[in-house]
Image 1 (cartoon, rainbow, N blue to C red):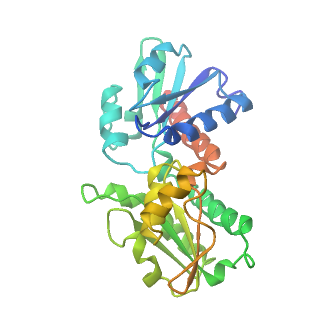
Image 2 (cartoon, helix red, strand yellow):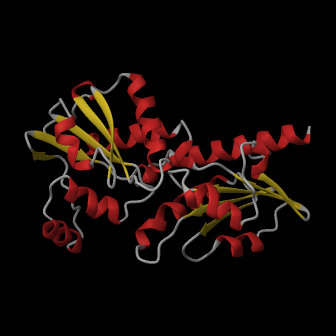
Image 3 (cartoon, helix red, strand yellow):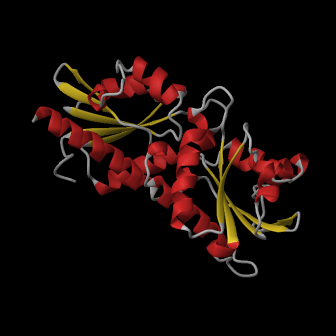
Length: 285
């Protein structure tokens, strides 16, 4: 792979936020790791909603090939419409619409990391990490545990929940957990429904978010039953809002970090680049 991308730049494109610095951290962490591996001529961070903005970063990059990987978990409006339109891509059902020649260089706009099948490995790794790290009284066996993938969801777009449900189906097919369910912040079934949905005593929740931002650190613990003032008090003191595991409604509940914080996400990014690179090679042939 090093030879294949030694003349290419990689731009990791995050959503960004003007309110929460936590949301951009995984983008910088992935970029640092990929720079360390020296696979690309250049690796840059860029954002849609904060500095450095993607258009400015692209103007500064001089490599003849540039791969843009959107670090989004849903193929929604921003990822598949607003951003590519702003960057001059006219996406359609043909894969070659993700490639565009600009003067002496070729830009490639990859599909989101959230739609890639290998993301299931990152979800499973986050679930395993939290019970291994907090084994009280001992780590539960997956066969005795219900796994929940907690996404955002929105009534405005079916795409918001599609990737969550896709990964739930893939993990369910592995038959490693007693049951696997999708739950959401803003759609049914809600995160608070997990107690009723689980037939097992052990529950593991993996947030389907890029970062441990406000949804993960505040909203999910409250929806799981922690009092809002207590959550804010713990966070203000630098403590986790959810204590693993917590007993509630006769269940023992572990809440993992966001899937986007899992180191395996770097491999998902590379898979997206490889896909588009193969497409570019076949297109030239």
